[in-house]
Amino acid sequence: MSSRILVADDIEANRRLLQAKLEVGYNVVILAENGHRALELARREQPDIILLDVMMPGIDGYETCRRLKSDPRTAHIPVVMVTALSDVEDRVRGLESGAEDFLTKPVSDFALNSRITALSRYNTVASELRQRQASGVAAGALDEQETSELGRPARVFIVDEDPRTSRRSAVILRAAGHKVTTLLEAGDMGELSGGGVDILLLSMSGQSFDALKICAHFRMRETMRAISIILAVDPKDQKNAAKGLELGASDIITLPIEPQELLARVRTQARRTRYIEIMRQRVDRGLELSVIDQLTGLYNRRYMMNQLSQWMQRAFVGGQPLSVVALDIDHFKAVNDRWGHGVGDDVLREMAHRLQANVRPMDIVCRPGGEEFLVIMPETPGDLACAAAERIRLAVADEAFQLPELENPLDITLSAGVAKLDGAQDTPADLMGRADKALYDAKSGGRNRVVSLAA
Image (cartoon, rainbow, N blue to C red):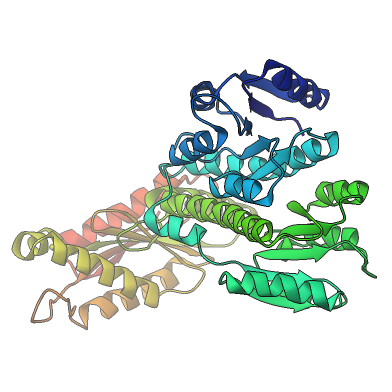
């Protein structure tokens, strides 16, 4: 999986070395000689990943990373800090500045490729979700509630047969507020499939179980794919660590585990998992907005036309009847004029509630606009549709609307027009046209009544 990678380092030899290593994997490499240039290129080129040297003139890597993460245009781009410093505090400082990972010079091919592989997998999912979101509802920076969700303590599941190291990791994480469950045997991890877990900390060293099989198992099961897997590995076991990343592990941490590094990696993985979940929720909201009327919660005109066409085709093929009921609130303009649009909105919401309470689960209740409603009734002949429309009419007329803004209940009625499908030559426009004509006749005939118009 190739990526567009921005490499920022003030020493040209270092830039060229990383470029050569990355281009072996068919990545596209963009070079920056300092922090200011890195910020400029990141905003303009929108790379998939940024490799950022710590020691640079002007603004160092930590400050560059902080600026990248505070800019909505670049905050989503994963950053890997590259440093000659090997102290844990320096590594953690990079992660706390917003970086997703770090590499220590001299950068080994294994370390470089493993980090790029893991980040490319994450970035592919995140980028797709951002693009899908942008094509629906408006994209933008995380709001206050979403940002708070990113920082929530993680739910961590530790699998390590060594009770001493397992207990030590649990104590470190619990002291930081994370919720931790430990498991000394890998035979029964069924509770993870029920959700409620953000991160699996899985030891690969000295275990009787096969950690690689567990990685593969998690990625094959839909209910477990969202869980981030951090592999705790022996520094000498690079081959299996690399294989674990290939199979779907999200990160690796070397043994012995340093407390601050563990906390930083857990925090990073939790934020990454929740960011993906937030993007998925945004996409879901965007899809909902495209088919749902936000005032009433009913389906909108776009969805109505799509469903009507589909049900008509099914009726043509299967020979089943199909009817539609067009409904309109009587004297709705007078409600708005006398009581205001707030009361009018309350009437529309209550009308939607009564419609949904008086149709079958298979019926499709829509609000194409204004005070107009339409019910698609699959597998329903005209006489039964008329009976259903009459039931709806009575449910509205027989009980006055008790509205929050009014002291006294409001008497509301509606008129309905019913039309049934008439052979394969019928179009959605024909069917809805007959229902509208029947509705017009009901209005002209005195309102608060149901009229059926034969084809």
